[in-house]
Length: 145
Image 1 (cartoon, rainbow, N blue to C red):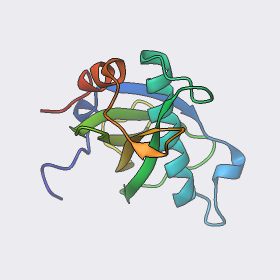
Image 2: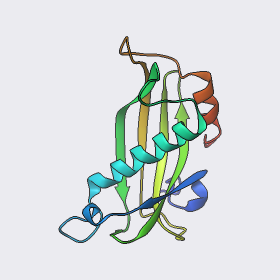
Image 3: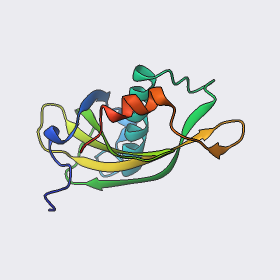
Image 4: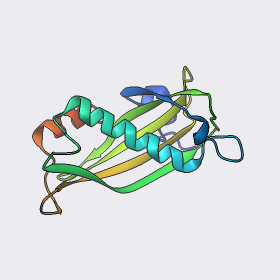
């Protein structure tokens, strides 16, 4: 495994608890791979809602997902208690790439990790726009240098 991969709790700056649900399991008895993307989306948006003035229903500028990926290292299943770690890997003019790690509660090694890229868009024009200052400030707090 590459030493630069964010596989430990210390690699992330902010954490949120996630409750697994029975329906998250697939027929093999572990969290289905597509469910991790829901965890990623919820983690990023929770941070933005709590730390900026982002109103996902009414904001003129919103983040659209343009890319995502996930690497699975160990399985999780309902009723595991899990936590999502969040970091920012890169900030551009109108885009940001987050890093998210999913951990079994209390574990130091990640079970799954990935990236999630938002492009900020003027909702009415449907065109990319620079990241608003308040959002950029909140993102910079999570930036891994």
